[in-house]
Image 1 (cartoon, rainbow, N blue to C red):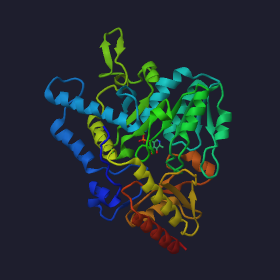
Image 2 (tube, protein in one colour; image 1 turned 180 degrees about the vertical axis):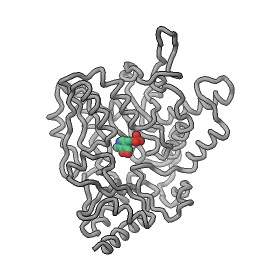
Image 3 (cartoon, rainbow, N blue to C red; image 1 turned 30 degrees about the vertical axis):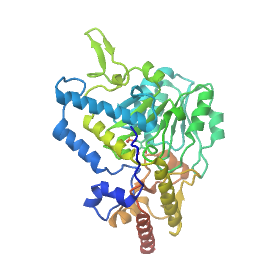
Image 4 (cartoon, rainbow, N blue to C red; image 1 turned 120 degrees about the vertical axis):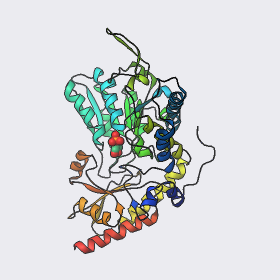
Length: 409
Ligand SMILES: Cc1ncc(COP(=O)(O)O)c(C=O)c1O
């Protein structure tokens, strides 16, 4: 599936694929960790589906329905190739990262969990990879145990080893923190957990767009990500699961398109992944996700990482020249997600100042409230970059931050 010839990572050329920048020529969009802008191919792919190809899938025997089904199912191949999954049987369509995690919690973990068991998560989880585990622990009487980190935002792997025990029934860890930018050693996490026979879910919401992912090599049991964070539509996502897990899991949503046979007395479910995809899914969204992954696979991930390391490094360096600005999250291995704060300026005011100059960043707790409590701050301002962003956009952000400081003092 991978295209043979890769296109060079050149942000000025790549931007031309994104209509949003034609409509907002002066926009510095630095909120990519929240959601990414969409290339023309994705927008056209969704529009053309509704315009020319629309039919429901898996049901009709007429030409449009057959073609819609084939197109929809081809996206599973592309998702498998993007993350190195062995087969399309491992790829479950979901409505996003959150939905994938909830499915694993309810369908995989809940029946295995009882009082005195433990679930391990990291201190830097997005609420999506915290609350579902917290809720199932409350329901079963199990304990949610947190892997701590140091002040730079690096996981304390010794503490992780100590906390892994015979009681641990699951480990869930974010690959890249959406607040700190830390890249976690997921291979080590999986390795240590597996030595104790503990399954691991990796939240790849912030990693798939930029970093090479190979779930076979990583050996994680589950891997989740969202379409809208890989240049695709909102409301769709992927759950990867190992064959032995998906086949043993029962569906949690029931209805059409997930059955083999139904009578008034009983139902025999379809095999995975279909048994987890009840009802009419977001067909156009999945097809749009296929175009997004096709867009992404044109580029060499090594080149993307190189560019983003340079851009992120430059941004961190330049931000240091803004008086009294403190960067939160200084892990050695980090992605271009940069959180910062000022002692006496609220993050929302910072974002408003930048917004007035057409520079879009995010401010708040970024759905990581417990992490904010650890740093004892109400929130941060966060600039997050992808490979259509430029060094010039960093300069613009830093200039406005300096002007803001002058204005407020
Ligand atoms: C690390 C991480 N996990 C999970 C999520 C939730 O993703 P979604 O809202 O697309 O389900 C996000 C979204 O920001 C995220 O950054």
